[in-house]
Length: 167
Image (cartoon, rainbow, N blue to C red; front, side, top):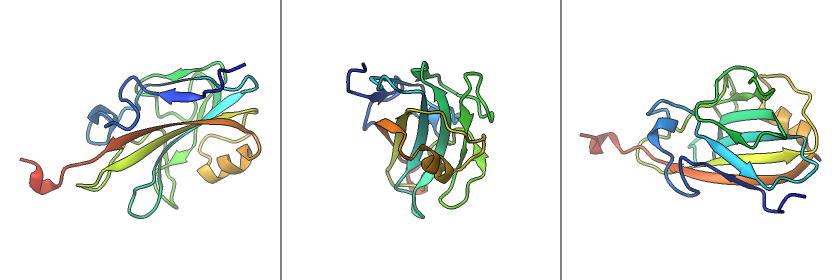
């Protein structure tokens, strides 16, 4: 049995601290390394979502990765933006509020001057989702309804300085 504490963390930044620029659209736009532990015993797959609830037009989805195999407990820096990963995980569509048109990780890119909270949400499922690469978050939510066994969150912060502050 898991230790009843499903936890998600990153060696690149601690919970509630700034996401390093290398993992943002201002840097190399590489996904940060992630690791997790404490999932329920009946976990068959994971779904990972990165969202920005502070976006001016509503929550933006910056990453959607589904069917991460249960035996996987970490993701490296710079996960490829391919439809399918070698471990069997699939990228869903991301980027935007009502429009989704990109596959793979898209790093923080908030408007100048405001701190945004980026929520990495990892859900442990008791099934694998019968969805294709390029599916939407709404499709993932519908397909995983009733199958979420646990959820872990990691929040990172990112802000750009106003252009007037940059020298």
